[in-house]
Image 1 (tube, helix red, strand yellow):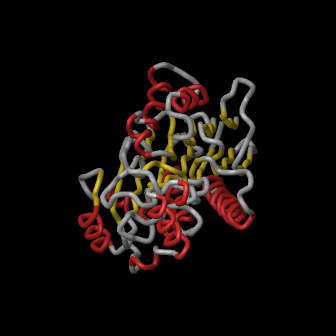
Image 2: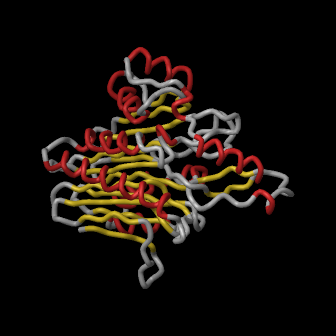
Image 3: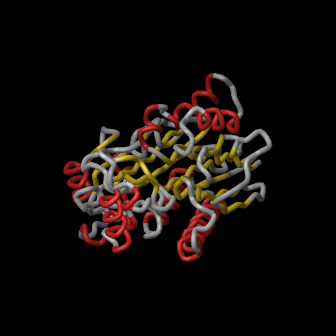
Length: 330
């Protein structure tokens, strides 16, 4: 069925009242990134190149929780994570705890291609970045006024905040004794693609959680949890990292396709339905060019395009008659 790609900018309980100044820049970046990836696939570039290209574009946008827009940990620092995976070879690379690398997804690919390892983190990953000569920035480059304010709100509310929905008023939560999960205003980013030759790839990048404990690592860089690709499909997940890790969400979708013979749409819907409501979203593509974007949240910033001509950029959709929130492109 030809090439296809899908990308996301995070999932969560995004209110339909989200003001235009928060909504439109994200939609514009999704459109620009989608067009960039589709053009690359039309030119015959391999899926692995395309997912890296698209995620780099998303990382450079301060409106998403990755790269330039990464949220702040409890100590006021940025800790960025990313992963890439190539389906045909099962080769993969991942990084965590980055504070200076402009595009973590590209460093993850270098881990895959230039080391005998899969995963590098914190000081070791930063040293590898310097050795490879990748673009780095002063840590202050990633600390925006918007994210400083969000950290302040999270601390006031005694909360760890996940992607999207407005942070709760601290006054309502002053009596909380332990941090509880809530959602905030930017999202993890990811992309999956299948090229004209049927090769699959996935990439995901994040800044983690607002007010998280320093050193916390979520699902994004964990192969099989937030990122996975094999010869049949590629998956990138977003949402509450701990829930995605517990369910190895991305690998579970691929396993249902591989071992149970389920269509990609059904496999994604089953995995999402098995997670707590409001915790998981994902995008996936199959070797045959099927695209699926599934979630159990109220919304997910997402986009997809196929060689057959389907093109979509959206946030909200009404659920199917059976109650599933699954978008599919053929």
